[in-house]
Length: 302
Image 1 (cartoon, rainbow, N blue to C red):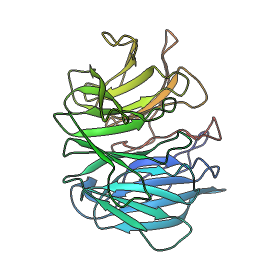
Image 2: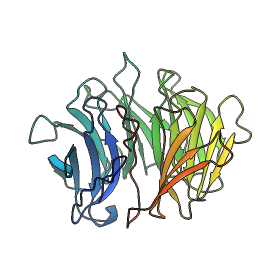
Image 3: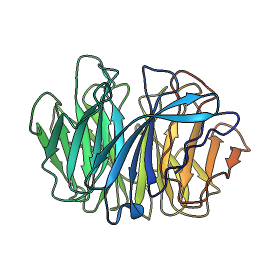
Image 4: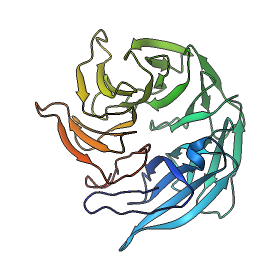
């Protein structure tokens, strides 16, 4: 596994672990959480790595082991030490980086692998959403030991769930059923169903600068932008990856810039507002590239 920041690559290799997700801390500059698994998540255990930058690259601050592969990670929005991971055994785990042992709590309701977890960024609501291979999305309050609500409607594996950074109680999900769906917690149901690709959709993200704009990345190697005010056609399509797109993220600093990573081993940076939309292709990985994030503190860290 390698974790890379902007400018010269900063790399940390962890033998026997494959990285599935990387998330920068919203509090501590440069701190990075990585969810990893043995044997590509097919068998074995998982490890949550907490990494800090140093002069020589990245150093391990703390690690936590779990008895199944870890597939995603999200930081708390109200405590700099707390985060949640999700795993192949259908559970979510709550960790505290200030404590060497853990987890503090385990939430076990999904009946199959949990591939996605996200903590709401909206002030006033401490909610977490998870998406699973059991075709359900679950809503959690981390202070409560059980889920608050279960959302059904997808007809295949749910690969990605992401809160709107603009609209309280609103989140998106992407699935192997080829749809992007927008959900309303208050209505406990789906608001919009978008047949976004003719292939499994592995990732979605919400634009930080527009409440109506989302992007999807799929097995068909394409990225597509969607305006929720008119979903009949994508507002942009970005082509260049040669294998499935595993994760896509909008930049927190530029309204039309995003990054994607793929099973083609590359990370690509795009600006969908420009005719030559591909800004850069980074080829320093030698395995499937699954995790990707932008730093909230530094425009040069990815």
